[in-house]
Image (cartoon, rainbow, N blue to C red; front, side, top):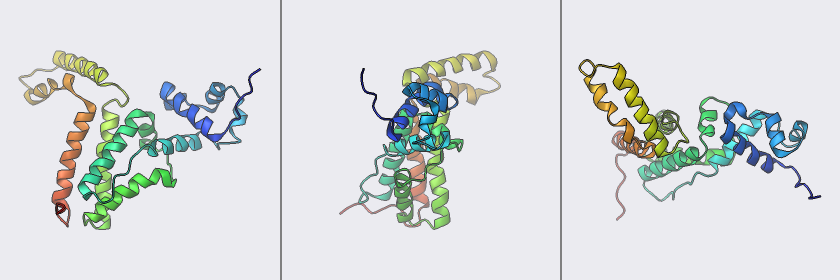
Amino acid sequence: MARREPLNREKILDAALALAAEEGLDGLSMRKLAKSLGVEAMSLYNHVSNKADILDGIAERVFGEIDCPDPALPWPDRVRALALSMYRAFSRHPVIPLALATDQANPTSETALRPLDALVGALIEAGFPDDDVRRMLTAVNSVIFGSLLLSTAGFTVDDCAEAGGMQVDLFARRIDPARLPHFSRLLTTLPAADPQVDFERALDVLITGLVAAAPGGAPKSPA
């Protein structure tokens, strides 16, 4: 008989991330997780405290996938690189932004907070006072998480195109273009929507606004 690999926290978090991806946050339970690992539920508590601890653990893992850019880059480039890396990491694990947005996960480890620290550092370098740093950080996070949650995170581009086509057909049957001409015009863009392209465009607009609002103005180009 093959010897079973000893249970540990890392193995539990691997299984939890896979289970959450398959069944969603509601489907992630201690009982189902234990079953997927071939152990009794009580065995899990030797390595994790509860479901909240597991959610914090898998969220920390995804934060660990975020690349922090070279601190020598101009601050707008660092903001863009961080936001894009966050978007890509969370897109690969769409249950994580949902867990964070609904306060089901609140990781506080250095691994989880390092990307946010780098983002705050870029905004401080821009010359914003502390209160505005907080506001600008909220704006960047809103674009990231809003884009993820509103674009049905985790779907492929083909999935989104199909969903967009269904939305166009639904609205086209129910609205009068003569009475809602602007909304009708917008509907024609939905089938071709690409979530990451849309996110990057929104991010670029936001960064343009940050540069315009920054007390230090646009960073000087390297000599």
